[in-house]
Image 1 (cartoon, rainbow, N blue to C red):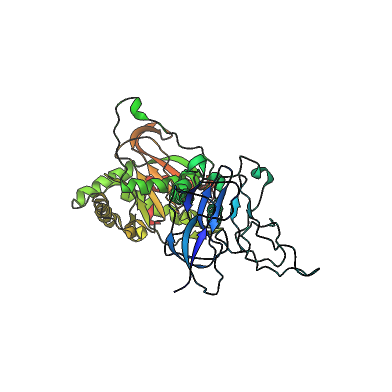
Image 2: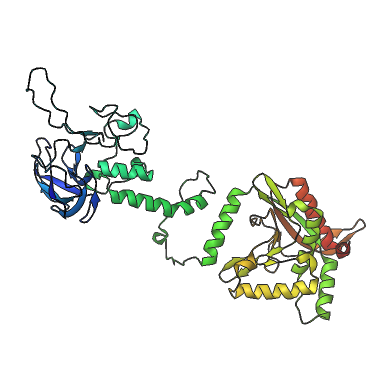
Length: 466
């Protein structure tokens, strides 16, 4: 068993009954020589009482809020090295000092006892053992430090003279400053919760925790780095009766993706119309023949989209840094409205399937989506998406691209319109098309050609045979 030593408060000047504001160690902790044990706070400075030697803390003699004066015992330490000399007067060895922090946050060791002059004439006094100096910021030299002094390494700090002016330096103990520096925390951004706004270790930890929790939300809300003003905070209840309803899991996930896609992709929407009079007549005829399956206009849109993707391969691609990945397969995503929110299952290899097979698969995957049984595999690998609102209404809209795809087709409700044929007006069933595209990959002329060709295929399904 090692020798027990008392850690006492050294000479702290003309101060008495100084409160203990922070316990830096606990019973059982292993400490190094000069490591801070507790933090004291006077009217002018915060100070750490250092450990007189390396060892294990066997007992703490003070607790938070206690008041203590010079010579007061703060802890009992069992020495790890039995060869160390016992404590000197005032509870410290001759080579130890108290690390103090004044109102500007600077650190300096209190003066150590100097050898008294005397001895034989002209003979220099015996050298005193030198303890390692406390850690100091880069570029700051402690009084009395020499080139041979051992200074513990600490993260470098860039100093700004204006920031060191009175009232600008954050109010924190040396241990808290070192702790914040190790975590890369700027104490100017941390709000202190202790008396007079002093920053504690818990404040730094809370700041880091809050920053980590807010990071994903902040990135999403900022649109990948956009400098946006904060979202307005409004007490809606003061204007009338309200009800708070939490978002569904699907709404939370899709909302974050949509926000990212809208903020980071330069969207442009090309609007066009397709004459689907002949297509609708054929669809009804097909449905009457095959009553075991519901043939919807969406399967024709899928086949037409595949034809357009073949003709204009840039629409069947994804950005990968400075490269464009051109896909040789045709997986079409279909936006499905469910009670929990919007999901986009993918129909794979749509180019290899006929209208009836697509109708069966579309019905099955839509039912699976509404029942909440889709797996991640069901919603991955899409090349191009289609969002159809034709069963609801509307004349046009701007669909948001489903990254990493580069385009999406929006379809609104078809309606009968008079169409000039060159000889007269005829009633035709027109389908509004809204093509949103990533302008980094696709220019306006290419988008207009893609939409026009898509409308042409929907108007004459014989083009699908080419």
